[in-house]
Length: 334
Length: 279
Image (tube, rainbow over all chains, first blue to last red; front, side, top):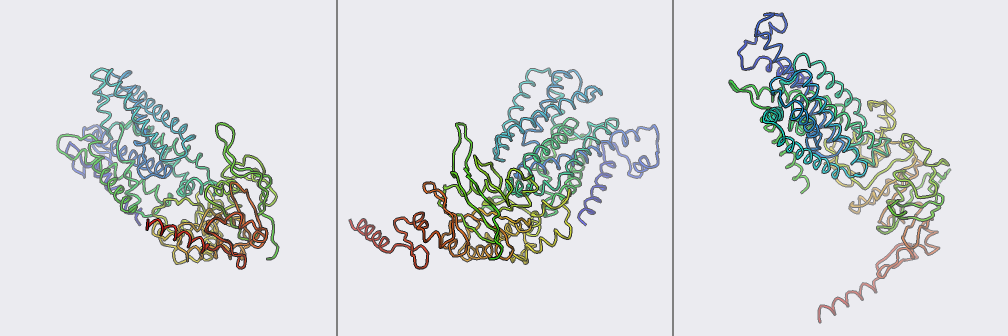
């Protein structure tokens, strides 16, 4: 039942994203363009198919990917405040992207990267997040304590930020501007042509996560209980880190370091479903994450004449949720 | 008791940790046996190495030397999954579980039997029902784990170990932090389960009197004195129980085989305190 409501809301939000934008296009005409192939070479078709559709798809996929990453990290580290950005995975991606934009592509403007430029950004992002992931895996061999590993992740994040600051300092004004724009986050970075690559990578990562539902359920009991039930925490954690690394780096490369969705939305899903079974929570995260992505995108484009940066909107959703989780925790401990 | 079998045998076992310079030994050259259909209690002061021994027997850590075998097969030869179907554990750590009801928690004990998605067969459902019934927590099945009292929670963890359907169950201080009636209830539960279901149950505890009244066999453990095993009567007759636990202020009553507070010592202590106050 809850899944049905979520699915309907997701579809409704998806169409809302197609209907709303800086150019006024009546919903009936949008439908006409989408389904009846109206206005073949007109500008409105270009806006709907070439801009709004990929943007809405990106919002759904990125929201789902970040939410599922956050959920898996929270389960693996048994910490409600774990998430791709907190563990330094996002900042690893950012570092890779910073290298590319600030040094290699410093001359290209933020508005239009060439295909090769995007490929370089994607490669940088992936390399950066995998490097941080490798570091986290290495740490996790010595740091059996999950909290310590979390702190190591946070420290790594600070280190990469400091390198990014240095890179910014050494770069050209154009490069700094380009990086700053990327850093604000957006869902309009994936063109229709890049969509197959983007969506395939995300869907592949989401499938991997779905394949891990049973071990994810068992490690809720903690490392020793899991081991006693035949599940090695080390193996699960490694698989999780690779999966979340893939999802986070692809999203970060195209959309910038999107904050709070990965951290906060899994908590919203837990509040909705009130179960811990990942067979329910992961599909729930995919739907709700997609919804939150769409809702944030809608908030970005709602104001007349301007488009707000994504990271100006996501904390509005994220911070209240996280505050609620922290206060609830405090009350319980007393 | 009929058909008692040796299930766990320990030969020349040294437990401990490898540290940077050699090894830190905890238990030295231990030979002992656990039997099916029995509740065995592991007694000893804090720091004697009870948890290390339990961890080693459960296969969580490797022994420094010696062999632990289950039904004649060395623990090393067991795969992770086989071990999961042989030994179930209840640990001192309390998993932080949110939004999980008791039935789901107990159901996680079926993980070694379920397939890739963790879907339950009718045998799995039956095992969970049986575990809930045996531990007497059928009424709690839909309660969230975080809302349970300590005693209820402990029963749920024991039910999880039962759903695992292992011939051997290890429990690390299952009665710690419980009120007295709950302690007795848990001990009686474990005792009757061992006897009725022919399980090998081994638990560490600090509840000396209860262990002596409600267990079939006792392992005494002390850093200085090492490990002694036997029934309550054997250990009483040999005087080991007294050697391990009698201190100034504690005396052993050989008639009922229980420890008492030494009243002379208590009176002496009060007069010392009185003198201190009046001066």
